[in-house]
Amino acid sequence: MAWGGGGLGIDDWIKRLGDEDPTLTSLHVFKARRFGTHEVKTMCEVLCSNQSLKELYCSGHFLEPEALAALSEMLAKNTSLLAICVGDSQLGDQGAAVLAVGLQSNTTLTSLDLEGKSLSAVGVRALQAPLGGASGLRRLNLSRNPLGEEGIATLVEVLKHNSVLENLDIGECGITPTCGASLAELLSSPDCRITRLRVAENPELTGLGVAELAQGVRDASSLEELDLTSSSAGDEGASALGLAVREAPQLHTLTLAGCGITPVGCKSFVEGFFATSSDPVTQAHSLRSLDLGGNTLDEEAVTALAVALASCQFLSGTLSLDLSGARMDAPTLEALANANGVTTLRLFSCPLGNVGARTLAQQFQQGGMRDLQYLDLCGCGIGMEGLRVLFDVLKNGDAPTLKVLEVGANLGTQDDAWEVLLVEVREARPGLDVVWRTTDPGGERPVQS
Image (cartoon, rainbow, N blue to C red; front, side, top):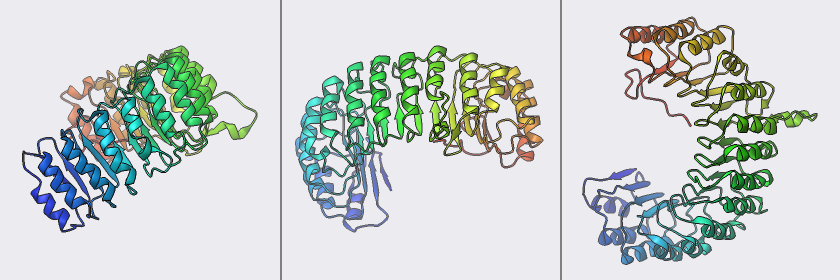
């Protein structure tokens, strides 16, 4: 992989590409790197025959018409590139149309990133040929483009006979409630093979639109991941999704963070998804990740969810659960401790305090949260007293499966005795990574997916 910045040109890369350097498989041209029309044309001349480069990322660079034409010609001839991201916010519909000519002839590209390129329905229509049924693209990123209702409707018409695309990102695209039915039509298409759909950062998408989308989720044959972060799904959307997800057993990741869901909506979701059934097969589900963080959930709603989780079996045997910001009391934490298969639990910014920390410690002592591997307690208002009680239990070997504990932004970590306690637990549990600041001397902050 090569990274470029600092105002330099690309002569060094051109030589390596021309020499078919087998180590140069991914090229990232940072915005600070000189990348004008001359550089683009020179690079494209080499890439027409290069067989080693697999990824080309040069987003953020303005492309003159001559440079766009060179890229289009290169895409028509190149037979090695798998992923590409080019242009800046001035690319627009006309730029997309120029690239489409080359993309139509390309046979190897699997990932096309057009995030933030000012595309409208006109630009989507221009891409109809390369995005049609014969396309080899598996990933398409159209996020941060003002597609709106017309653009989404056009995209659905273009993609509904595409049986190859697996990953579609239309976050922050001005999606409205009307678009919900269009997207449901796409997901319900017999040819649709989309496994991951990101519709995040679309605040105009209200509960009515999400309820329409939920029909497509129910009927989809391949959808595995749905991300509605920061939509306005609200209680109506949550209720509809609960019923739909129950009938979509292949769905394993549902993200509803910051969707304006209240306790009423959470309980409706639980009632729909975890409804009792006489058929034991329907008691199992492939769900592996449920994100309800950033919603206004109270103790009663979270307890209802936890109780339902305790009676449900997940086919993967593991579940990542995000309840960031929710209110919890002792009975809520006790119910969570009995939930099945929870391996990741994010309680960021939940107002637990010392009382909550003590309750968690008690649950650990009693063998609760027996599958837990990752616990996020950042910003939970825990003082030194609560941290000490919790860490004493961990030092004794309780919660034996726990591998990562995040406790940053708690008052106790500012106490003079904190680092002594930290050393003690690290010595007693060398396999437990305690993270409390981004530059933690005990190791790099783990990246959770």
